[in-house]
Amino acid sequence: MKKQIPYILIIGVLFLIGYSLWQPKPHKLTFKKASFSELPGWNQTDTRKSLRAFQISCKAFLKQDPNKSVGSEYLDLQVKDWFPACNEALSLSTNSHTITRHFFQKWFTPVAFFDQKPVHGLFTGYYMPLLQGSLTKTKRFNVPLYGIPNNLVTVNLDTFYLDLKHRKVYGRLKGNTLIPFYSREEINKGAIETSAPVIAWVDSFIERSFLEIQGSGVIQLTDGSQLVVGYAAQNGAPYTAIAKVLIDKGVMTRDNASMQHIRTYLKAHPEEINPVLNQNKSFVFFSVLRHQEALGAQGVALTPGYSLAIDRKWVPLGVPIWLNTTRPSDKSDDQKTFQRLMIAQDTGGAIKGVVRGDVYWGAGERATNIAGRMKNDGHYWLFIPRDALLRFQEKLA
View 1 (cartoon, one colour):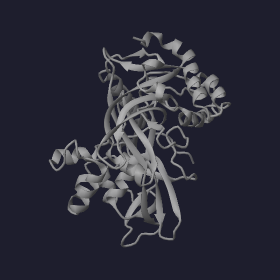
View 2 (view 1 turned 90 degrees about the horizontal axis):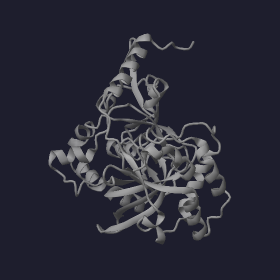
View 3 (view 1 turned 180 degrees about the vertical axis):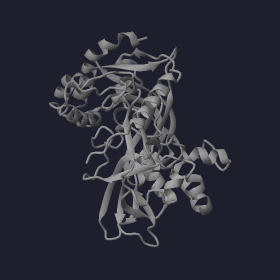
View 4 (view 1 turned 90 degrees about the vertical axis):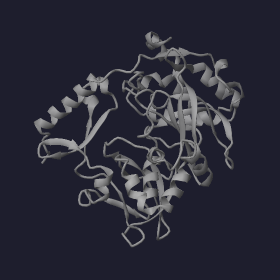
């Protein structure tokens, strides 16, 4: 029998909507158009792999209802806005750099967020980690990797109010009242032992926490087989960066708080692992993926070095983005210029802001090394379909 939604739950959701609408609005941003010649490094870049990544997004667009909204809260794009460019993209060979660059110049206009001056932001990296695990709990493998709890309630707020696109509330029912879901500390103390399936058991709270941050990963099982797991849901609590916790404790600085340094510190101070990790109340639940590659929020396979996680409040999924930032060198602390046409194909709990991005680097030692040390200032331009841009004239500076 289908469970009826309690009346008081609806009242609670409407209260959350009203509270959200009451909150002060951010400064009114505009877009500033740019020519391709103004994009730093555009004339020297190779766009062939960028087009291949874009073709993956196009295959997803072309399967959808043309009138479906696929924009952000700031840019109301529809699937049909992508059809002309995508139809041509899928007909092109990606072997010619000249052809691929001309394609993007033909179909798109670069625009940047502008608030009296260009908006800059933070760019980090993520990767697909490899964890050791078991399908049964053992003395070594005793940290549960949970699937979605059967008492987790997810409310899509845009079903109540269109201005709240892509916003969700997560909670659980206590009687007829919707209350926040359990925090990380409560979950670690056994709050969902009877309500959530365990996908696998791993051997480290630290590595499970990093897996949550990355969003997907591979579990190497004791029998030699592997499970590929990916983000399925979350508890809805606000995300707190472990780096910030350790910086606030005075044991690290903004300059040295890398993933590698965090892992080394916590392993050297095991008594601090859960007290530190529990300060991040956010918790991620996983599902087993059928595919070997990581899937992004757009539902498509991610391309190492070319897929970007963005804040969907501001940036639509599928948009090509010209990124101008730096990244760590492979084997040293030197920084290298990183100017590349990325495709917005993913999101992340820590990726919040008008200009904010997380570069997907793939799997393996090199990807882990670069992603774990990337924390750089930068700027980007969104490539908006030319015809669609005509609808946003009031937002152009």
